[in-house]
Length: 137
Image 1 (tube, one colour):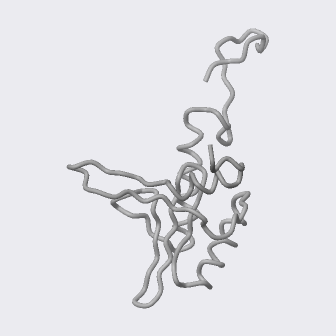
Image 2 (cartoon, helix red, strand yellow; image 1 turned 180 degrees about the vertical axis):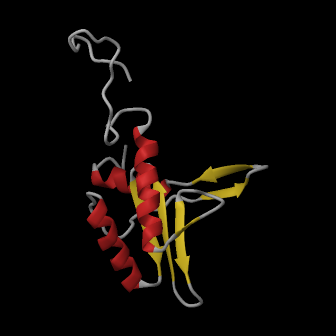
Image 3 (cartoon, rainbow, N blue to C red; image 1 turned 30 degrees about the vertical axis):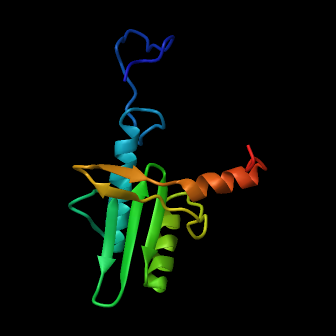
């Protein structure tokens, strides 16, 4: 970080500001946010997947809860409704969140990595065309 243009302290040059928290738009801000998010989610009792660090989980013999982070969206799935509600409340205490309800679409990839993968978004595309009255275009 460099000193802002026009800012100077009498007799000193090259000073910078010490940040007490990350600023949106800095290269390090997403890393700082994810570090905090990781700490908050694990303090709730979820474990971070060793295969994909954007997947957190908690499961017993009968119940399971999974939290998946994708950029700025979070998907929570599982069969333990009580734990899911508790997790949502826990996240609301620490972050500004908005519950968008149940998923309407979930894109999944088919195929093998060696032969290539495909992703079908036909239903999603058709729904957008219907919504915009452009199905016959």
